[in-house]
Length: 254
Length: 156
Image (cartoon, rainbow over all chains, first blue to last red; front, side, top):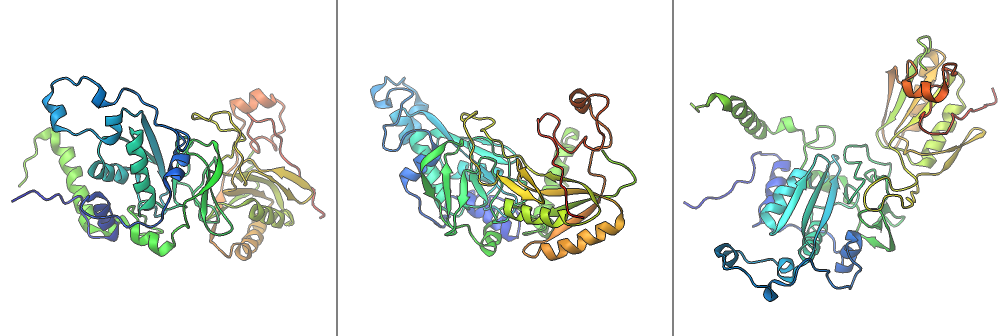
């Protein structure tokens, strides 16, 4: 029988959402649309419309060594063209943000190719070839993995994921890259490292509390689903913890 | 610094306050008799980008502005997260509680009693203010910063 990944344990809606995001066979719901130019502006790596700077000549122009691995693995578009490696970094609020650093890394590893994610407690960075990055960033921003108020695209100065939200429901950002306008639409006024943009980039309206609670991938006993309510998840974690602890003693399962 | 005679309380709103709301809250507190000292606490909003590739470039932020409390102008440097108060006696705490109950209607808040201000000068305080520092002012501002505390004169 062919192996079918289970992606994760749990019976709660949080666990279900985690599995949904990780499973590349599941199409993520598109919630908003952002143009390619907007993505380039927020990323701030190159001017919109300019050519992609390269780190090496395109693979087609290079003499490739005779290597079976290179024959087996098809290069991504960015690698083929010799693009530079660039990044996007997200900070996700603990108040029911739709994705979380570890979750993002798992999801990206299952769904994208040619990436190098870095996972930290409050932020997650993913590096890849520029052309691929823009494509992946679009996916990450347009789908249900993003919320304009609770997820920040922050290259530096990311502090805020564990803080209380502001009165208007926005996650704290020392550099105020995104602003909630009078019309209820969140606009990026600075790129991800905090340099002002020539024009504001709209990323849509913040999702309401009900939607967030139904789409989040973090447990939170006060504003969302409590971890202790998902007995299957607890059982799984306790098993891992116990096996890890006993590992040095050559555990044998009964 | 903390004087054991005077109780301290901390107002913790469940959301961080915008300058306009903070201004209303502080004005309400400034009109209350029996508050000795007050401290605004929260994450900082620097004037320039502190690190990253854009380090040193200006950081416009709509929440970093001056608010008017009683007769004084206070330049906010933080997003107001908590307000720490030192009061004359326990009866003032109850007054603050009843005022805050009416004030926080859109989101809840916590009123915590405890010790929230410095109890003795630190090395940095000593280096900055010297051995004869006014102990009632130590701990109210960041000693690394040149700003001094604001003194509110209310009509009482």
